[in-house]
Image (cartoon, rainbow, N blue to C red; front, side, top):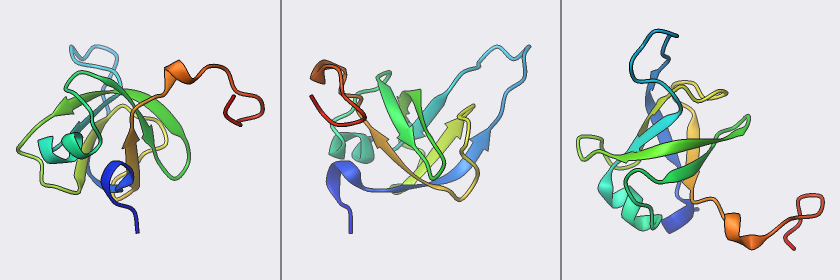
Length: 102
């Protein structure tokens, strides 16, 4: 079972925007306690890993969302009831060879 930084979240709300909408782009909203467990800050760029793919999105901390749940917007490959993981990208690790750490 995963805990802490790797704990899964269930998508309970998905918003898909249209071209003319004022607020667009990939976004994930989670509870402050969930963000603290993962050492994430509001507005930070995070990886959202779903069952089909991994996408970068902006993180928004929202205390109206229950623990263990996530609301997502405009993230390809994510649908309602998917189990996702939200992780900090490790850009400072350097290049990889065939997916293996340097």
